[in-house]
Amino acid sequence: LGLANGAQPTRQEIDLLLGRTEPSEGNEDEAAPVAPPVLAHEFSIVREKGEERWLATTARRVRDDAANSERLIGVVRDITERRKQDEEVEERQQALAHLARVATMGELSTTIVHELGQPVGAVTLNAETARLLIERNRAWIGGDASRFAVLHELIDDIVRDSRRAETVIAQLR
Image 1 (cartoon, rainbow, N blue to C red):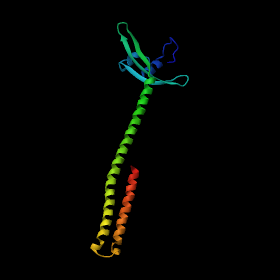
Image 2 (cartoon, rainbow, N blue to C red):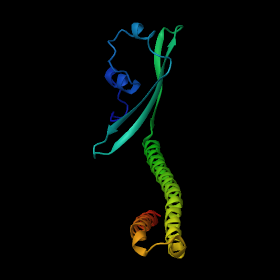
Image 3 (spheres, rainbow, N blue to C red):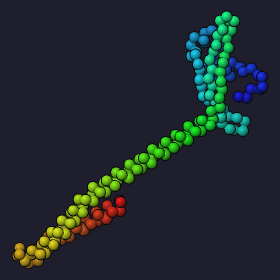
Image 4 (cartoon, rainbow, N blue to C red):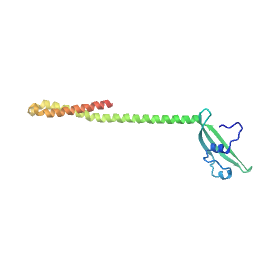
Protein backbone atom coordinates (compact mmCIF):
# COMPACT_ATOMS: atom_id res chain seq x y z
CA LEU A 1 0.00 0.00 0.00
CA GLY A 2 3.00 2.24 -0.12
CA LEU A 3 3.86 2.09 3.61
CA ALA A 4 7.39 1.40 4.62
CA ASN A 5 7.91 -1.97 6.26
CA GLY A 6 6.88 -1.69 9.93
CA ALA A 7 5.46 1.85 9.55
CA GLN A 8 2.21 2.68 11.33
CA PRO A 9 -0.60 4.00 9.12
CA THR A 10 -1.99 7.44 9.85
CA ARG A 11 -5.60 8.05 10.85
CA GLN A 12 -6.27 9.42 7.34
CA GLU A 13 -4.89 6.23 5.74
CA ILE A 14 -7.05 4.08 8.01
CA ASP A 15 -10.12 6.14 7.13
CA LEU A 16 -9.32 5.66 3.44
CA LEU A 17 -8.97 1.89 3.89
CA LEU A 18 -12.28 1.70 5.73
CA GLY A 19 -14.08 3.68 3.06
CA ARG A 20 -15.00 6.62 5.26
CA THR A 21 -15.80 9.68 3.26
CA GLU A 22 -14.87 12.09 6.08
CA PRO A 23 -11.83 11.49 8.26
CA SER A 24 -12.47 10.86 11.93
CA GLU A 25 -11.63 13.70 14.33
CA GLY A 26 -9.75 11.76 16.97
CA ASN A 27 -12.53 11.21 19.50
CA GLU A 28 -13.11 7.54 18.74
CA ASP A 29 -15.82 7.06 21.36
CA GLU A 30 -18.21 9.26 19.37
CA ALA A 31 -17.47 7.45 16.09
CA ALA A 32 -17.93 3.93 17.50
CA PRO A 33 -21.77 3.89 17.81
CA VAL A 34 -22.34 5.07 14.23
CA ALA A 35 -19.76 2.80 12.59
CA PRO A 36 -21.16 -0.45 11.20
CA PRO A 37 -19.82 -3.64 12.80
CA VAL A 38 -18.05 -4.63 9.57
CA LEU A 39 -16.82 -2.10 7.06
CA ALA A 40 -16.11 -3.10 3.47
CA HIS A 41 -14.78 -0.91 0.71
CA GLU A 42 -13.34 -1.35 -2.78
CA PHE A 43 -11.06 1.19 -4.38
CA SER A 44 -8.30 1.49 -6.94
CA ILE A 45 -4.76 2.68 -6.57
CA VAL A 46 -2.22 3.60 -9.21
CA ARG A 47 1.26 2.25 -8.63
CA GLU A 48 4.49 3.99 -9.52
CA LYS A 49 4.62 2.67 -13.10
CA GLY A 50 1.02 3.70 -13.76
CA GLU A 51 -0.43 0.24 -13.14
CA GLU A 52 -3.94 0.35 -11.68
CA ARG A 53 -4.72 -2.18 -8.97
CA TRP A 54 -8.06 -2.77 -7.24
CA LEU A 55 -8.14 -3.44 -3.51
CA ALA A 56 -10.93 -4.58 -1.22
CA THR A 57 -10.79 -3.87 2.48
CA THR A 58 -12.83 -5.46 5.21
CA ALA A 59 -12.37 -4.30 8.77
CA ARG A 60 -14.08 -4.14 12.11
CA ARG A 61 -13.40 -2.43 15.38
CA VAL A 62 -12.91 -4.70 18.39
CA ARG A 63 -13.28 -3.29 21.86
CA ASP A 64 -11.89 -5.05 24.89
CA ASP A 65 -13.65 -3.50 27.88
CA ALA A 66 -11.60 -5.53 30.38
CA ALA A 67 -8.33 -4.10 29.08
CA ASN A 68 -10.01 -0.80 28.17
CA SER A 69 -8.56 -0.95 24.68
CA GLU A 70 -9.64 -0.99 21.08
CA ARG A 71 -8.11 -2.48 18.03
CA LEU A 72 -8.88 -2.62 14.37
CA ILE A 73 -8.89 -6.00 12.66
CA GLY A 74 -8.91 -5.95 8.89
CA VAL A 75 -7.95 -7.55 5.65
CA VAL A 76 -6.82 -5.95 2.43
CA ARG A 77 -7.12 -8.09 -0.69
CA ASP A 78 -5.94 -7.44 -4.22
CA ILE A 79 -9.05 -7.97 -6.36
CA THR A 80 -7.65 -6.71 -9.65
CA GLU A 81 -8.04 -10.07 -11.40
CA ARG A 82 -11.61 -10.46 -10.15
CA ARG A 83 -12.45 -6.97 -11.42
CA LYS A 84 -10.97 -7.84 -14.84
CA GLN A 85 -13.00 -11.05 -14.93
CA ASP A 86 -16.16 -9.14 -13.96
CA GLU A 87 -15.53 -6.69 -16.81
CA GLU A 88 -15.02 -9.58 -19.27
CA VAL A 89 -18.27 -11.19 -18.10
CA GLU A 90 -20.11 -7.90 -18.59
CA GLU A 91 -18.66 -7.48 -22.10
CA ARG A 92 -19.65 -11.04 -23.03
CA GLN A 93 -23.16 -10.55 -21.66
CA GLN A 94 -23.52 -7.40 -23.74
CA ALA A 95 -22.26 -9.22 -26.84
CA LEU A 96 -24.66 -12.09 -26.19
CA ALA A 97 -27.56 -9.69 -25.75
CA HIS A 98 -26.62 -8.03 -29.05
CA LEU A 99 -26.53 -11.40 -30.83
CA ALA A 100 -29.92 -12.27 -29.35
CA ARG A 101 -31.35 -9.01 -30.70
CA VAL A 102 -29.84 -9.69 -34.14
CA ALA A 103 -31.31 -13.21 -34.15
CA THR A 104 -34.71 -11.86 -33.17
CA MET A 105 -34.55 -9.31 -35.99
CA GLY A 106 -33.65 -12.10 -38.43
CA GLU A 107 -36.63 -14.18 -37.32
CA LEU A 108 -38.90 -11.15 -37.54
CA SER A 109 -37.74 -10.24 -41.04
CA THR A 110 -38.16 -13.85 -42.19
CA THR A 111 -41.72 -13.85 -40.88
CA ILE A 112 -42.49 -10.53 -42.57
CA VAL A 113 -41.03 -11.72 -45.88
CA HIS A 114 -43.11 -14.88 -45.73
CA GLU A 115 -46.28 -13.06 -44.75
CA LEU A 116 -45.85 -10.50 -47.56
CA GLY A 117 -44.75 -13.05 -50.14
CA GLN A 118 -47.90 -15.15 -49.87
CA PRO A 119 -50.46 -12.46 -50.80
CA VAL A 120 -48.23 -10.86 -53.45
CA GLY A 121 -47.79 -14.24 -55.11
CA ALA A 122 -51.56 -14.75 -54.99
CA VAL A 123 -52.14 -11.35 -56.66
CA THR A 124 -49.73 -12.26 -59.47
CA LEU A 125 -51.34 -15.63 -60.00
CA ASN A 126 -54.88 -14.19 -60.00
CA ALA A 127 -53.95 -11.44 -62.47
CA GLU A 128 -52.32 -13.90 -64.87
CA THR A 129 -55.34 -16.19 -64.56
CA ALA A 130 -57.67 -13.29 -65.36
CA ARG A 131 -55.61 -12.46 -68.46
CA LEU A 132 -55.80 -16.08 -69.67
CA LEU A 133 -59.55 -16.30 -69.03
CA ILE A 134 -60.17 -13.12 -71.01
CA GLU A 135 -58.09 -14.42 -73.93
CA ARG A 136 -59.84 -17.81 -73.98
CA ASN A 137 -63.35 -16.45 -73.59
CA ARG A 138 -63.15 -13.30 -75.73
CA ALA A 139 -65.03 -14.94 -78.57
CA TRP A 140 -67.67 -16.29 -76.19
CA ILE A 141 -68.13 -12.88 -74.49
CA GLY A 142 -68.22 -11.22 -77.86
CA GLY A 143 -66.66 -8.07 -79.07
CA ASP A 144 -63.44 -7.07 -80.62
CA ALA A 145 -60.05 -6.93 -78.97
CA SER A 146 -60.07 -3.13 -78.60
CA ARG A 147 -62.83 -3.38 -75.97
CA PHE A 148 -60.52 -5.45 -73.80
CA ALA A 149 -57.38 -3.33 -74.34
CA VAL A 150 -57.90 -1.27 -71.17
CA LEU A 151 -58.58 -4.44 -69.19
CA HIS A 152 -55.40 -6.01 -70.57
CA GLU A 153 -53.39 -2.91 -69.62
CA LEU A 154 -54.75 -2.97 -66.09
CA ILE A 155 -53.97 -6.65 -65.66
CA ASP A 156 -50.48 -6.15 -67.13
CA ASP A 157 -49.88 -3.32 -64.60
CA ILE A 158 -51.04 -5.59 -61.75
CA VAL A 159 -48.74 -8.41 -62.92
CA ARG A 160 -45.76 -6.05 -63.39
CA ASP A 161 -46.20 -4.41 -59.96
CA SER A 162 -46.71 -7.68 -58.14
CA ARG A 163 -43.60 -9.18 -59.78
CA ARG A 164 -41.62 -6.12 -58.73
CA ALA A 165 -42.88 -6.63 -55.16
CA GLU A 166 -41.90 -10.32 -55.39
CA THR A 167 -38.39 -9.27 -56.45
CA VAL A 168 -38.04 -6.89 -53.50
CA ILE A 169 -39.29 -9.57 -51.10
CA ALA A 170 -36.87 -12.11 -52.60
CA GLN A 171 -33.99 -9.69 -51.99
CA LEU A 172 -35.01 -9.40 -48.33
CA ARG A 173 -34.63 -13.15 -47.93
